[in-house]
Image (cartoon, rainbow, N blue to C red; front, side, top):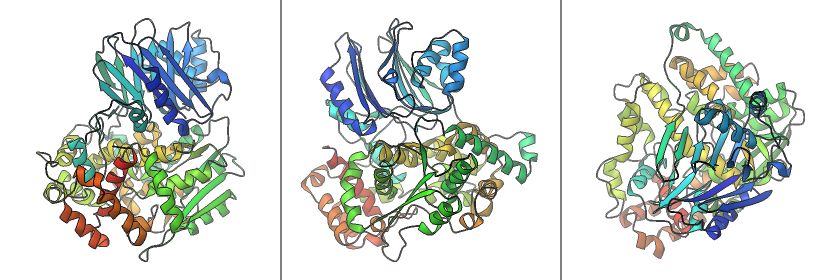
Length: 591
């Protein structure tokens, strides 16, 4: 896993090599093992390398195949690259390296845009065709690997992180009002292509973009899961679905073992990460390195789930590391956490993953993680009530949105409110698309394709890559997700959610972990903002920069300062933390 960037001009102007170098340097944490920059005329690519597969310099990037006339920068991992390489060798292609980067190059030459449908993995890449002058940008099915871009005049820049684009300069950093509406209502989810900044956009997941030499653009969406069921699907028993899920999950975990370095697990103690540990143990992983993190309690709320992670670590005899973070250490880690965010993200998990990744990176460079299971297998509390919904858009908004437009009008400063309820309109449009008829399926499709991408997945990438750590997410294996989409909702909603997954897990891990109350990554100090945390956010939101920006009404901020714990969102988040995250992120990145 790495960091990529590039600059392309469409008026014959030469690439700004200094800007390209600044982008590349900014992404140094994503790829501490190597750096490469190449610029020729109107095309320039930059790369930071984290060595995972083919540790030799033959796999260094930017990678050029002079015979085929192709150059690539690539971030991610193609898990089935050995099989694809064998197929390509059968077609007569010759390889000079042993990794997955060169396989992408040959696959593009052999199959064109259809190559991405053959890839099992996570990826963002850019390819330059020498003969046509064409540029190709692609992003994996779930946007596990990020790809931001900016366009100005006859110039395009792209990068794995938004701060890298800022480092290049000449960016419109004004606040996008529509994105602000999403951030404040849609639990900080800003759907692509928007970001909070007007001058930066992101390539949607499962999208391949071709850009001709004259700047003409064509997007091709190459994948989406269908929530449609055959007669056989409807007739299948709960036990049959359990066995299918377990088989598919075994395959997904096995695929993500491919590496020339050891692979560990981020072990929260929940069902999702625990079953990954169990399946890796089945695969014969002895001395598997596992890692857990916990925080001080606040307002009577426990800050760790060590009892369950300890149980799994002991059961499978893993090499377990437990990290406890005192409140002071949490405070000290916040500046680095905000610096690592490509976009403002409100989940308290961010600092947890940031600190966990810092420790884990001292031991290994690849981990598997349990993100995605709740969205794919209906684990969240808002899914069961939607099963009988007659107005799924309104009912979804009621349980998921942080505020409706009326409340938003009372919270935003003058001039920032949009003409319509942007978040509600987006959800209505998405849920109105064909391919998912039942209310629960509409919500699951939205969460899998939008919320998951711009909340949990982005969070894990940003925080792990801040420390040069590659995180792999087997629950987002696209074949597993396609299978889950076909499972009738009642099997997923059983047992309080994730019923079919829990039944599969019983074949692998102890029931004590499965039958407990659902947990989450708790960081109580950031939910119940008191003492030095309250001082910190008050200083940020009353600073000169914040006052000049005027995003929030003064009376609203004063109400938050007076009683932070009285302003908790339907998803149990702090409104004060949400608004302070946005302003802190803007100030951290000099905006």
